[in-house]
Length: 172
Image (tube, rainbow, N blue to C red):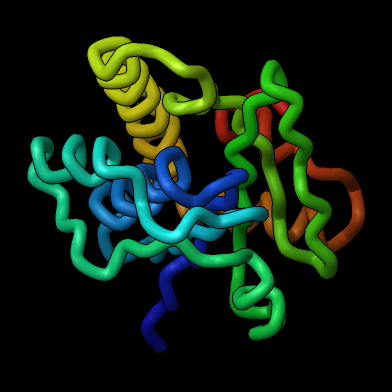
Protein backbone atom coordinates (compact mmCIF):
# COMPACT_ATOMS: atom_id res chain seq x y z
CA UNK A 1 0.00 0.00 0.00
CA UNK A 2 1.39 3.37 -1.03
CA UNK A 3 1.91 5.89 1.79
CA UNK A 4 -0.22 9.00 1.42
CA UNK A 5 1.63 12.30 1.70
CA UNK A 6 1.47 14.19 4.97
CA UNK A 7 -0.85 17.18 4.68
CA UNK A 8 0.26 20.53 6.05
CA UNK A 9 -1.97 23.57 6.49
CA UNK A 10 -0.15 26.88 6.94
CA UNK A 11 -2.28 29.56 8.57
CA UNK A 12 -1.47 33.24 9.06
CA UNK A 13 -3.51 36.40 9.53
CA UNK A 14 -4.16 37.44 5.91
CA UNK A 15 -3.20 34.42 3.81
CA UNK A 16 -1.59 36.84 1.39
CA UNK A 17 2.14 36.55 2.05
CA UNK A 18 3.73 34.20 4.63
CA UNK A 19 1.34 31.28 4.37
CA UNK A 20 1.20 31.58 0.58
CA UNK A 21 5.01 31.43 0.46
CA UNK A 22 5.04 28.46 2.85
CA UNK A 23 2.44 26.57 0.80
CA UNK A 24 4.48 26.96 -2.40
CA UNK A 25 7.76 26.12 -0.67
CA UNK A 26 6.40 23.00 1.03
CA UNK A 27 4.91 21.79 -2.23
CA UNK A 28 8.35 22.22 -3.83
CA UNK A 29 10.54 20.72 -1.13
CA UNK A 30 8.04 18.18 0.19
CA UNK A 31 8.16 16.13 -3.00
CA UNK A 32 5.75 13.23 -2.76
CA UNK A 33 5.96 13.15 1.08
CA UNK A 34 4.10 16.40 1.84
CA UNK A 35 1.14 18.26 0.34
CA UNK A 36 0.61 21.84 1.52
CA UNK A 37 -2.31 24.25 1.70
CA UNK A 38 -2.67 27.72 3.18
CA UNK A 39 -5.40 29.79 4.78
CA UNK A 40 -5.93 32.96 6.77
CA UNK A 41 -7.77 33.97 9.91
CA UNK A 42 -8.93 37.15 8.18
CA UNK A 43 -7.92 36.52 4.55
CA UNK A 44 -7.30 39.28 2.04
CA UNK A 45 -9.03 39.14 -1.32
CA UNK A 46 -5.88 37.86 -3.07
CA UNK A 47 -2.21 37.04 -2.47
CA UNK A 48 0.17 39.97 -2.13
CA UNK A 49 1.79 40.81 -5.51
CA UNK A 50 5.30 40.68 -4.00
CA UNK A 51 4.63 37.17 -2.66
CA UNK A 52 3.74 36.00 -6.15
CA UNK A 53 6.69 37.89 -7.62
CA UNK A 54 9.25 36.28 -5.31
CA UNK A 55 7.78 32.83 -5.97
CA UNK A 56 8.06 33.34 -9.74
CA UNK A 57 11.60 34.66 -9.35
CA UNK A 58 12.53 31.40 -7.60
CA UNK A 59 10.86 29.28 -10.26
CA UNK A 60 7.88 28.27 -8.14
CA UNK A 61 4.42 27.96 -9.68
CA UNK A 62 1.79 30.46 -8.59
CA UNK A 63 -1.26 29.03 -10.36
CA UNK A 64 -3.99 28.10 -7.92
CA UNK A 65 -2.59 30.16 -5.05
CA UNK A 66 -5.44 32.13 -3.51
CA UNK A 67 -6.32 33.75 -0.21
CA UNK A 68 -8.93 31.74 1.66
CA UNK A 69 -10.33 31.30 5.16
CA UNK A 70 -9.20 28.61 7.58
CA UNK A 71 -12.88 27.91 8.20
CA UNK A 72 -13.23 26.13 4.85
CA UNK A 73 -10.63 23.61 6.02
CA UNK A 74 -12.31 23.23 9.41
CA UNK A 75 -15.61 22.53 7.64
CA UNK A 76 -13.96 19.62 5.84
CA UNK A 77 -12.98 18.07 9.19
CA UNK A 78 -9.52 17.78 10.69
CA UNK A 79 -8.96 14.07 10.08
CA UNK A 80 -7.16 14.63 6.79
CA UNK A 81 -4.76 17.34 8.04
CA UNK A 82 -1.58 15.99 9.63
CA UNK A 83 0.09 19.28 10.58
CA UNK A 84 -1.14 22.81 11.12
CA UNK A 85 1.56 25.43 11.27
CA UNK A 86 0.53 28.87 12.44
CA UNK A 87 2.76 31.52 10.98
CA UNK A 88 2.25 34.35 13.41
CA UNK A 89 4.14 37.48 14.35
CA UNK A 90 3.91 37.75 18.10
CA UNK A 91 5.68 41.10 17.97
CA UNK A 92 2.69 42.41 15.98
CA UNK A 93 0.24 40.99 18.51
CA UNK A 94 -0.95 38.11 16.32
CA UNK A 95 -2.33 35.21 18.27
CA UNK A 96 -2.11 31.52 17.49
CA UNK A 97 -5.29 29.80 16.42
CA UNK A 98 -6.52 26.89 18.51
CA UNK A 99 -7.43 24.06 16.15
CA UNK A 100 -9.89 21.47 17.43
CA UNK A 101 -9.13 17.80 17.19
CA UNK A 102 -5.94 15.83 17.25
CA UNK A 103 -3.98 17.45 14.43
CA UNK A 104 -0.36 18.28 15.31
CA UNK A 105 0.12 22.01 15.57
CA UNK A 106 3.12 24.32 15.79
CA UNK A 107 3.70 28.04 15.67
CA UNK A 108 6.45 29.61 13.65
CA UNK A 109 7.03 33.17 14.76
CA UNK A 110 7.75 34.82 11.40
CA UNK A 111 7.53 38.57 10.90
CA UNK A 112 4.87 39.73 8.46
CA UNK A 113 6.72 41.40 5.57
CA UNK A 114 3.85 43.82 4.92
CA UNK A 115 2.80 44.61 8.49
CA UNK A 116 4.36 48.07 8.60
CA UNK A 117 4.12 50.97 6.22
CA UNK A 118 7.51 51.00 4.55
CA UNK A 119 8.99 51.75 1.17
CA UNK A 120 8.61 49.18 -1.60
CA UNK A 121 12.35 48.51 -1.34
CA UNK A 122 12.12 47.80 2.42
CA UNK A 123 9.12 45.53 1.88
CA UNK A 124 11.03 43.71 -0.87
CA UNK A 125 13.92 43.10 1.53
CA UNK A 126 11.45 41.86 4.16
CA UNK A 127 9.89 39.45 1.64
CA UNK A 128 13.29 38.03 0.72
CA UNK A 129 14.15 37.55 4.40
CA UNK A 130 10.80 35.83 5.13
CA UNK A 131 11.12 33.65 2.01
CA UNK A 132 14.57 32.46 3.13
CA UNK A 133 13.44 31.83 6.72
CA UNK A 134 10.44 29.79 5.59
CA UNK A 135 12.49 27.88 3.04
CA UNK A 136 15.05 26.94 5.71
CA UNK A 137 12.36 25.74 8.15
CA UNK A 138 10.54 23.78 5.46
CA UNK A 139 13.74 22.11 4.26
CA UNK A 140 14.40 20.97 7.84
CA UNK A 141 10.87 19.62 8.19
CA UNK A 142 10.98 17.77 4.88
CA UNK A 143 14.30 16.17 5.81
CA UNK A 144 12.84 14.47 8.89
CA UNK A 145 12.90 10.71 8.57
CA UNK A 146 9.43 9.17 8.15
CA UNK A 147 9.79 7.29 11.44
CA UNK A 148 10.51 10.57 13.25
CA UNK A 149 7.34 12.11 11.84
CA UNK A 150 5.33 9.02 12.73
CA UNK A 151 6.79 9.09 16.24
CA UNK A 152 5.67 12.73 16.57
CA UNK A 153 2.20 11.74 15.45
CA UNK A 154 2.03 8.86 17.91
CA UNK A 155 3.29 11.06 20.73
CA UNK A 156 0.57 13.63 20.08
CA UNK A 157 -2.18 11.03 19.76
CA UNK A 158 -1.12 9.56 23.09
CA UNK A 159 -1.42 13.01 24.70
CA UNK A 160 2.19 12.85 25.90
CA UNK A 161 2.61 16.41 24.72
CA UNK A 162 3.62 18.09 21.54
CA UNK A 163 7.31 18.56 20.97
CA UNK A 164 6.64 19.43 17.35
CA UNK A 165 8.11 22.90 17.65
CA UNK A 166 11.35 21.53 19.06
CA UNK A 167 11.47 18.64 16.57
CA UNK A 168 10.90 21.04 13.68
CA UNK A 169 13.51 23.50 14.93
CA UNK A 170 10.94 26.15 15.77
CA UNK A 171 9.77 28.01 18.82
CA UNK A 172 6.42 27.10 20.31
